Image (tube, rainbow, N blue to C red; front, side, top):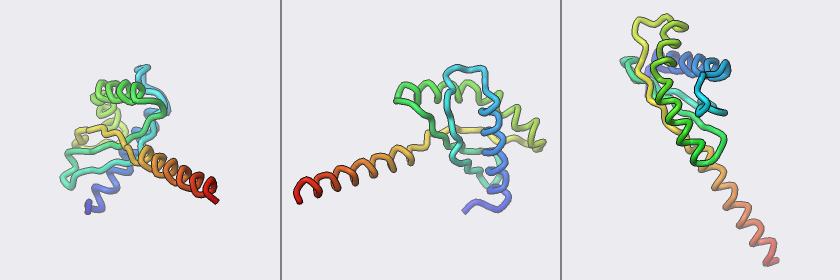
Amino acid sequence: MPSQRAHRVGELIQKEISALLLRGLNDPRIGFVTITGVEVTPDLHLARVYYTVIGDEAARRNCAAGLKSATPFIRQQLGRQLQMRYTPDLLFHYDSSIDYGNRIDSLLRDIKRDEDDHD
């Protein structure tokens, strides 16, 4: 369980990165990205940033490469906006929970359709 401070810092980081992405980065690989969560270590030195992106596997790979490339800039902007003594290192991770949920919905629809066909 993260500390209250780490949780607050994570929320601030999520808000600032989301705002930065809305303003746009000069990297065409970073398209429609949503920051779904941020987990910050208790010592505030590392932030795992979870994101989703609209598109296929190629769009995901391109976005991941774009975010990796933009990480130093994003970190610099975070430091400037949040005025923290130390800005955490950022690790971006694709959040597959939405894909997983869509797959479950698809399976449930298939089951329902099969039941309706057999009635």
